[in-house]
Length: 322
Image (tube, rainbow, N blue to C red; front, side):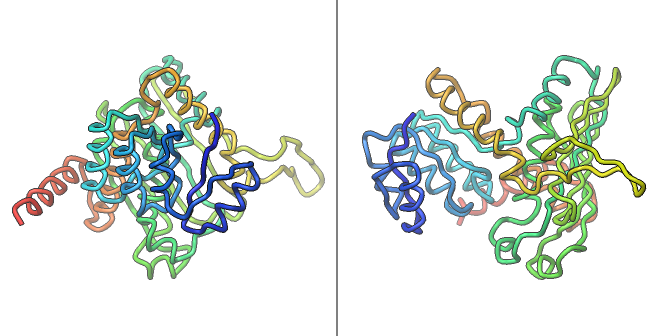
């Protein structure tokens, strides 16, 4: 594949990147690229609130689409974008990069091969090294739809099972500005799967020792887990204790390999004429789980995903009547 053009509302940023990778076509309007007949596929990596519109425009233009998560924060907008993709007969892949991380993939493959027997317990730890700015929190959709959405997707992927119910205990313990923005920064989440298995996710916006990314699946025949990645595995021991490297500090370091594998998988699917490994429905289901988590925080009770769908359907019906 060849990069044919870059569009960014900050055209200066687009020009800088274009210069680095040797691309001549630059624009501050993505519609210029979508209209170009020599462009077959697009990567949508803009801010979340633009994703659905760009996906709809790209589908209408007949382009194959890779879109970073989430497709949108509103299920109605997600459904409109997915409908546009179906009408156009193009392919859409959602950017859940952790599915392509070799360590997480080994956990998933072991579970799929029956190495742990019947999966019974899932545990995911996902903690950022430092909190995002409050201004980012306000437009990101909040922790569950911006950060934990990766963990929700990994839960479905690793267990090969659907989440049916979510219960959350959450607090604002890290940054008061996040609370003032209407979000939480610390959470413990319990998932109930269709099989009866139980999952737990713990999130924090602040881990002073680095980017904490771990997962474990326990089953009737054993357990499989992965630890954090570190810059090296050397351990130094002295009279004060054992000393090792801290985890890699943030997602660009931890998942650089996964991003490359992810894009290669997108290109491979297009060349083979097959559906991408992560589809629009995967993106939608992760958002439904995230919305159930938000409802659980507000209500203080477990929330079934069917409640989210019912609320969405009622809202759509009200809009149609109006």
